[in-house]
Length: 216
Ligand SMILES: C[S@@+](CC[C@H](N)C(=O)[O-])C[C@H]1O[C@@H](n2cnc3c(N)ncnc32)[C@H](O)[C@@H]1O
Image (tube, rainbow, N blue to C red):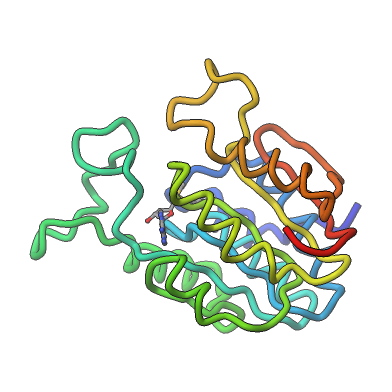
């Protein structure tokens, strides 16, 4: 088992707004430390306020690679005003829309991990369309519709290097457990069915798969 994050990283993670439970966060951190050994960047889709990013940043620091994190910072469907996961503090009063970029930057600053992270601000498929290099880890935690989760899988999974890891959050095989849709479950199923990925761990709703074949 790779070393746990240092206490200051764990404290920054726990203090950050977000949706990553501590036990799943530790499993993600362990996967990221392992993937970092490939010497390739670790990429997340779904930054929000930087809660899980802190853990990827610490893993990247340990391995001397960069953590990349993709988000348009306007929130997912279920985070919009009137929806269950909405946090009014994330709304920019001047424009009247969610903007989680300032909170994300504060989280990273508090964690002392800014230099290990590259923030990619924009829509995941647009950034993926420009991407052309291998990644040690792809962690999918973006939109929960089939359109968004499917595009994240199709856009980013092809870049997972041989031996690299694909992690998917909010995989709920039973629909009664999942209030925001089962799209993450469906992309996890799709990855397994492709024959290109083999599951290495399951922790809560976090699934980690290794690339053991080609394609997606
Ligand atoms: C569940 S939150 C991420 C939670 C975060 N990983 C954590 O640990 O708290 C999902 C995020 O994905 C972003 N998102 C949803 N669809 C997106 C898309 N198509 N492109 C970029 N970001 C997207 C939302 O803005 C939101 O911040």
